[in-house]
Length: 62
Image 1 (tube, rainbow, N blue to C red):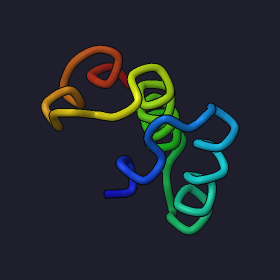
Image 2 (image 1 turned 90 degrees about the vertical axis):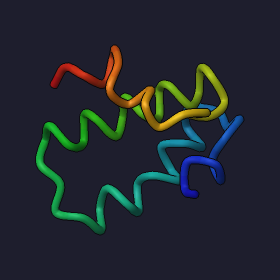
Image 3 (image 1 turned 180 degrees about the horizontal axis):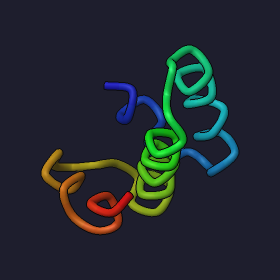
Image 4 (image 1 turned 60 degrees about the horizontal axis):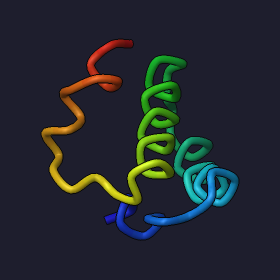
C-alpha cells in the first residue's frame, strides 16, 4: 500500500515519503539499499504492478 501511495512522485518526494519508514525501522545498510532500489523503480515506472518484480534485477542482487 505504501508503494501505491507514492506512485508517480518525483525522486525527492519519494525519498521523503520513505524517510520516515527508513528512520523508524532498524534497517541494515543492505536493507536501506534495497528500499532505495524500490524507490528508484517506482520513480521510473510509477508503481510495482506485480510483487514478483522484486525477485528480478535490480532487486535480486544486494
